[in-house]
Length: 304
Image (cartoon, rainbow, N blue to C red; front, side, top):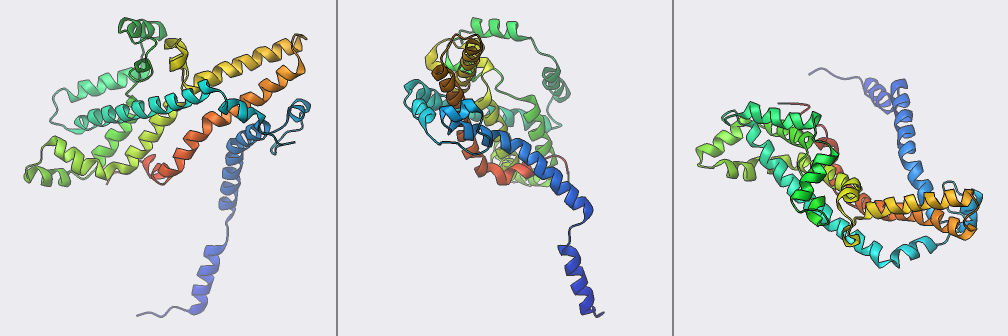
């Protein structure tokens, strides 16, 4: 056995602890990108906690000035806002659950070469990524189905994402075929193979796609804007949209001298508070799936 000089080991340890030029540049770029994502959110949070006079005078940057909770008290005192929050949570959970079931049930068969018409079904799925019927035909279709002003209008349309299905299909295709062959020899059918082999090995991809579906539905408001007129079925993001539009109207009227300073200050404090109120729930969920996210977004990149 060849001997290693102790001084060489010390040199290797020192070399591992040193930062190279490319590493420093990459770290600075990552920090700058992170700050561009974080600082606007911090600014909104600071404005939501600042006093009316501080907001109007433009003193608020990244720390609350003359901290107060007037805007949040107004939000939590509004029964419609709380009802909208729970309704949005229910819609998001129902939509995400059904969307994941459909995604799995479509991605799994498309990985099987024995499926007749597999190429045709793949073509139909890809076709929907590039061509759509348009807003008016989709609205007329939902109207004819009797889904207007119902929660199903926020769940059924767009329940399957072709992009997410392709990601999951790529991951299923990368799993070792020997596992399925061994299960089939033991007498397992396709559903048993899916439930006992594919899904347990795909937790990273399933968690990532669940996050994609949940965030997409939580942040959406256009479908509710088109299909929902009943205030009882308006999600949180649609209420936020109306608040922002209302604050813009107040700002325009203030420029024309038609509103008071109090009305303007209320709109300026309620809007950022509502943004924080609508964003925090999804931020609370993210840490629970973060450990799967990095692995999940690279699924299908390495096949082995």
